[in-house]
Length: 139
Image 1 (cartoon, one colour):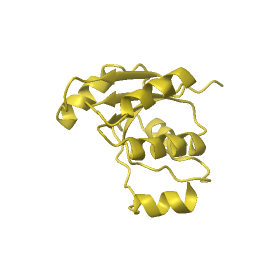
Image 2 (cartoon, rainbow, N blue to C red; image 1 turned 45 degrees about the vertical axis):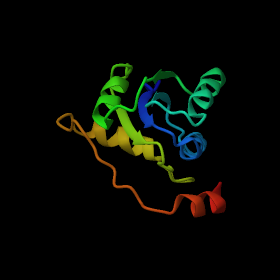
Image 3 (spheres, helix red, strand yellow; image 1 turned 90 degrees about the vertical axis):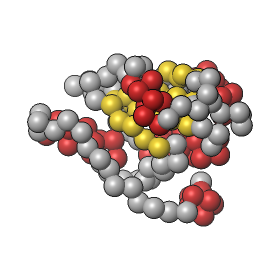
């Protein structure tokens, strides 16, 4: 059985360091099929070039560059316009998915959504950690 990919929408704004870590750990920890959609919300710190490079590598499926820093809801709405899958998820650009967990975080999301058709939304509780310390230890 072929699994339909889940579209993952992420918004970033002048947080290249965090976004790089997010992408690295997303690909290391996610074995369920997904397509990454990125909305760059007006970055000027090199994030846009990094997104274009990821697109060339096939790691970013779609991207949108805004002319200015939009309110978060407007940026996500722009990202939602690019979604094509039945299931999609929004994540923060500083999210670091857990490594080595089986089933993976995305498999859990899909299973929960498919478990009950009356469920329209799931909110994950994020575990807090200090980004730089975590990346030094695991990155």
